[in-house]
Image (cartoon, rainbow, N blue to C red):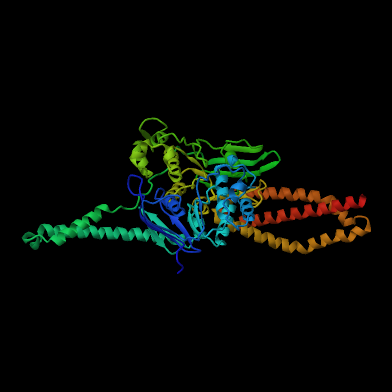
Length: 607
């Protein structure tokens, strides 16, 4: 086993109340990939800051190898006086580091490097900080929520980049799938102390549950032992004659241990407040379109969303997910086509940007809208402090300003407010950001069991797989062009259906490959003759009509595939349509290329 390049041992830290860290530790060896997990507020970010040297423990030992380089991704980067993102990122390089790495990373993270830091959104600032810490390829990379504000394509790229890096890694993330992909060890921070599992995150939850079960058994045994000793004190013959001082001392010690035991933090107790039932048809979109200038965000798209459906919107940043979401919920009018909303809709929205939060509000004021000390939950009056406990907030936090909460606590607070309001249509925009795993589990149960309808935007693949009944994605994920396709099932189901359609398309292309190559060879052969052949003239005149007919056929297929129940009723038929559509698109592209080549040849001969 290689010696550690970073070691934190018996770390203690408190902020006046109960200890935040009470003997926690962390050990990192060269090339290790550790995920640091724990509840919101358990001290994960604080421990990472101590490891990076940005915070100090009150006691404990911290060892950093003198020659080891460490880079830490902070949640709120400080851009200082830097005039461009490129300059900010390059300032993280050490002597001998390659500046091209900065350009490469910024490009893949969706930045040019020429942006002024003052113009960046929160997500863009995080991506710039990510480029800065990754560019030097340090010995240890400490990442706090690196996937926040990244789209799926970029998250998958980041997974590959980290797995191909020589850096040791300690990462905090709410994204289960990401942690499974990048980790080979797990450190669990719980009640101030840490436990280590020398396996990746995929094995964590089963191990955690086993540890808690064994702890509960041991605590039960301790309670029984105390009962036996107390019985001896009262009724034992020896006890009546002469007190056994040693056994009495042991009993006091057991009592102290039993009283001082801190059980695991409770789980959030919540359900969504149901409103009146909406109509069976919630949203009907018929060939809706939207463009901004010359950029088309939504080409003709049709869908029907029924009561009880849970729809996931997925796609790269800038693909138009928010635009499509606003059109489907009636907040934005389409350029063409029609949107029909169902009856009796009561909508509750969780906004990705958390713009609903006034940081000067107290928790109690925010939850009650300033209307006293009570709120109505499922028809019952409930005191705000009691409701706060359901979401793991302490009663003394009722008068705490929201600005004092961590990112995870703010997300939990917004969840508490939205779930207290009657609704039959939940709109969730990146609901998993900053939530710990246990709260994610609760949110998953709420979404899955919600009697109404849910439309959510998320980059969390695991959450999508566990909750949604259908997924809407761009037809071309790498280069969105406004075409959207709806697939039955979650993210993994969508990928499987796309792979099946792609395989069918390749078969069709292979079958048509020979005739196509002959068509390409003919114009070159006829060029020397000085005029188009009869077949070339015929193709030039008739190809536009054939392309138009093919486009109309493709539109009809897309309309059929827009039925959200099609895959459930007939998965083979759905896959056949998807394959037919892909093959048809390939055929249209081939016809366009052939027509363009013939037109250029005609112009050249006539010119």
